Image: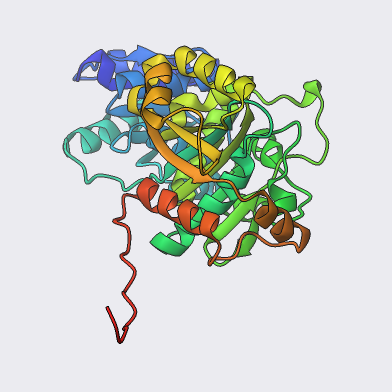
Amino acid sequence: MSSSNLLLYITDDNLRREAIDTLRRSDNPVSYDEHDSDWASLLERIGKTKPEVLLLGLSGLSVELSAAIRQIRYHVPRIRVIALNSSADPQTILSAMRAGTNEFVHSPLADHLPQALERILSTPDPDLVQVHRGKIVGFLSAKGGCGATTLACHVATELQKLTRKNVLLADLDLTCGLVGFLMKTPSSYSILDAVKNLTRLDESLWRALIVEHRPNLAVIPAPASYTRWDHPDENQLRQVLQFMRTQHDWVVLDLGRSLNSIATAVLDELDQLFLVSTLEVVALHGLKSIVHGLFDQGEKLQLVLNRTPKMMDISTQELENILGRSLYAALPNDYMGLYQSYSSGNLLDSNNRLAQQIGLLAGKIAGLSPVKSKKKFALFG
């Protein structure tokens, strides 16, 4: 086994020294690498080097074990984890097994670690651990008021209708998030609670944080109040998004306006980013600036023109030439329809023309062919 295939992460100095001494004195010495930095950098390293085996010391672990194993296997589903502990405490052994570790080894390591490694290495091609990976799409306004929140709410709803899959709508517009208000899903919890509790985030805690808008459509709103002191750690925020993938088939994010720090932080986690603009001069200026800044994102970045008038002063082709990108969708203007719907506490009715166009947008995002409407029987032509 090469050093890149065996990685040690043991924060307890005595246990680490014992593990290293055992590996060196083994009848079949094994080369290894150590990681002595923080947990976040360990995950980053695992994602890049993809080791076969991780020796994980349980003492002093900063993350709850079940969350730790989930985060590790998100990056490398095939990795095998040997949990190391200084004692054979039954509760610790049970917790390790429930968390999904492949082996549990306790001191004296010389009596147990070589045999555990031999058992693991005798099965070099283990069955792939199935890790659910949903898709994440984000909506970002070129400037305030372009309609990213409205589109995020409606697209999430339509995605659930069209795909019958499990959809999450998450509000990452932390300063003025309106998703909870528009979806009528008030909550005491927000995305910040998930970030703050990352070390113990599991399925049961996640279910307590989100609000079920309707079956298979859940919402996690922005915080009710927000200051700059509440700004989330960006690496932890990305880990929360990675966790969301494991819990939902689709995740729709409202990213607020302009290329803010949150949108920039989560960009690598997105499957697609929909940049929403109107034909206002200021909005188009912001749109062009963001497109230029995200030029390297390729097909991940898509443009949506919102509130398009029936008669435009500029053709679609001219607009695409200016922006250097084609439009993914152009949606009609229905300010009054939205006003009336929101005033009554609802989203747009399915018979509304704008709602139908958003439905087509959601179908395109999901890769579904548009459903052709059946022609009504007519006596004459």
